[in-house]
Length: 239
Ligand SMILES: [Zn+2]
Image (tube, rainbow, N blue to C red; front, top):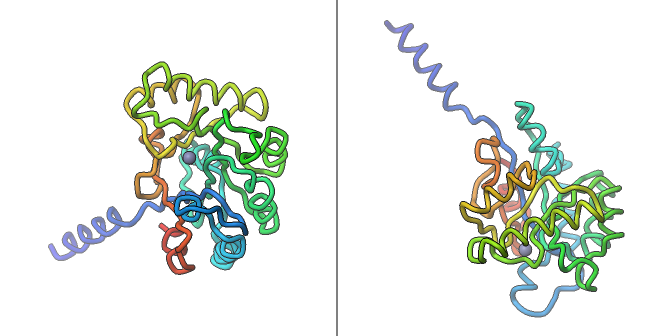
């Protein structure tokens, strides 16, 4: 009887053991020049802070995957450990001029989510820069066409937001396979649009870490705040 109890406890312990999982971290800008205004400021991280974060990942043997890599691994039934996905939203110019050079210095990779309608407008990276980033191992994914909130626009506008971004990236960079929703927002129609567009995985701003592709179009992400110290970053970057 005692043995049965012990086995039951052991089985319970095994069942409760964490499956692992990969944190997906959300950034916007990494720039020595902080833009004016509270919003721009909160979205911008100092390059030295970002380098310290990559140094912490390296010191703890945590590797960086792109979102596409993670989706492929999960589809193959693999569950990467000691891994993190770094994502950068909006496609600002610093993605090409600051972030990618730092990532390359550390041998890291990231996924950049681009709003196709803003490419090359002076504030956002141009197509040639995005192609170079991809050649350097970065993933270029979709973040809408005009960065509209998919949960509030009309079905026609929502369809345009998704399909025009996929078409533009397919034409000028490479076919995108993952998506990040502007403001993390979506609705039931969004999920159908993702499937029809051949997207493998899409990111919200729901808290949590990615453990499977059971719900591939509502995956969680963790925001890295400007004010996050290295201890907070460590908590964000580990399951
Ligand atoms: Zn955005």
